[in-house]
Length: 489
Image 1 (cartoon, one colour):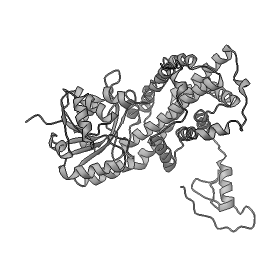
Image 2 (cartoon, rainbow, N blue to C red):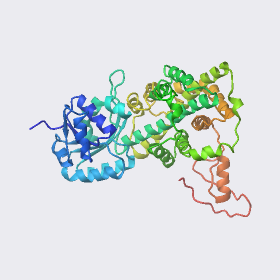
Image 3 (cartoon, rainbow, N blue to C red):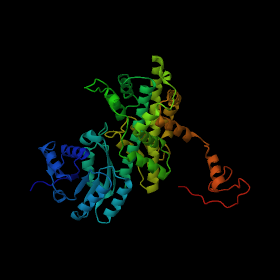
Image 4 (cartoon, rainbow, N blue to C red):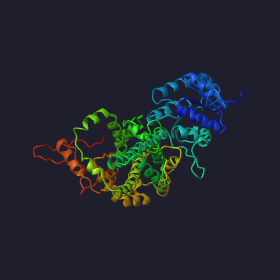
């Protein structure tokens, strides 16, 4: 009998197919299955031809082809499809067998599945996988969490296929219990939303605000990628801006319709921020920016009726443009720091809420290579949390505090420029508002609480009394002394 497979993978779309090839290239025998069986045959006759793979036409064949404990990873659409697959597999499995969801599932679903399957002796893991097609094939960032008993059996495979940092450390390690792995991946995607929109706003200011062409902007991003902003998204932006459509000779980016799509993880992150009471305005604004882009017909129709500052404001000398570009680099870096700070604030809140005991420095290391938000300064984030594991906010770490202080003048000037030119920069603006709000010792919420107490008797705390004592004022002289109970939603 042929040797049994080390792991089975269900789902032969882009990510599943490339993960299989990655695993096989690292010496593992992989059993493959897809609901549409023709895809299995096509894969084995194509990219999988001659490789150490087992094609399985049914789930029963897949289960029978695996070494014990069975390790089965599925790369299928999140939601009902995952539950249906688990229900189909469960009767064929034995206690100690391991199921791994490598898709973008909700962390709450993963927590539920961990609990349900543990009661039946099965080990469930939610593993966030980032890096897209190239990462899946050559080395992704992997964020596994769930039933920790599964990790010793998964570790040799996952760490072998994961991306590596310069010293060989894999960008994959155990995150924590329940849905923590998928939560970390969700926050990764939320930061990704903010980072992408921030870069787009910089491009928009240069192109629409300053009237620069794609071939003029391309070397700017290429230069940024050699300094503090060195990152995957800046790198591919430079590549995109340099690409020319072969048929028209026009920069390809100029031919793409300005309506953005999404798969929902940015929206989930924003919703969880609301649920946990964590301010993540950059991520939320990035989601709203995509929504606004989607109403293309409305924007085109509104343009002739809604006035702006006029085209004359965008004209300037080369010296003026050079100054704006220099300021923009500092502003983008400062805003990027705030975006990551907000993401780690959300991780911190979830860790406390669910008792996950997340290691934020190690999470930063998981994102150093392979994933979409990989960036040079993630190493500095790890150092910040290694120096102070209880750091309240990343912006308080000495390095980032100094960067933000040094970038502040440029940051503010860039936003003034965007406002003067009528170029929307919602994520950039949200970053500065977050920074100013976080450093503000007294916000106007005192007035807000007075308003709430005035119309709803919601009570307030006083600066001259201990925290936790609540008061109500009869503001009009005609109201009673009865106050509403205090609560947060």
